[in-house]
Amino acid sequence: AQSVTQPDIHITVSEGASLELRCNYSYGATPYLFWYVQSPGQGLQLLLKYFSGDTLVQGIKGFEAEFKRSQSSFNLRKPSVHWSDAAEYFCAVGALEYGNKLVFGAGTILRVKS
Amino acid sequence: DGGITQSPKYLFRKEGQNVTLSCEQNLNHDAMYWYRQDPGQGLRLIYYSQIVNDFQKGDIAEGYSVSREKKESFPLTVTSAQKNPTAFYLCASSASGAFTGELFFGEGSRLTVL
Image (cartoon, rainbow over all chains, first blue to last red):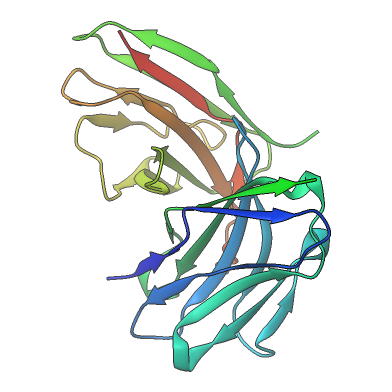
């Protein structure tokens, strides 16, 4: 079965500092990988996704993620964090053979200090 | 504006009562989903529907029921059989055809059992 691990429950970074959120997945075939962001009390918004091709993918709001098959990882990065990036971030995995549905990680709460 | 509307935003229920959460979309999407969100557990799939008059159980369907009589509507009933219903519930939809992984989320409904 698919599973997604986000090892960091909370991360605090200073505004302007770089950010990396970790995501590891367990899946036998080639997964589809996603990062979503959730502001408090709101729904989720897609940041970026990886299906195939270039392993470094660009998303909205200046985020990027890199797929590393050898490490089963899909870490999210941003070179310079803004206070408005404070939110909860979810990594998710899907695959065609599992139908049109995603498995989500437990989430990482990002706090930004000024 | 196209989107997903969930209602009510907040709901209080006494033990032993059934409650129904509404989810309506005007995106013309075929697929709709219900997720449950608990702190530190990410999103867990309750039910999903790929087409009208058809739906499948997700990972935590016990104590819940759904219907899909119209393309734009996918209500979720939390029954008295659900032992721990207090949670944040998210409805989502996705376009038909090739799986893109982009789920469009509503703003959620927070259910509290008194």
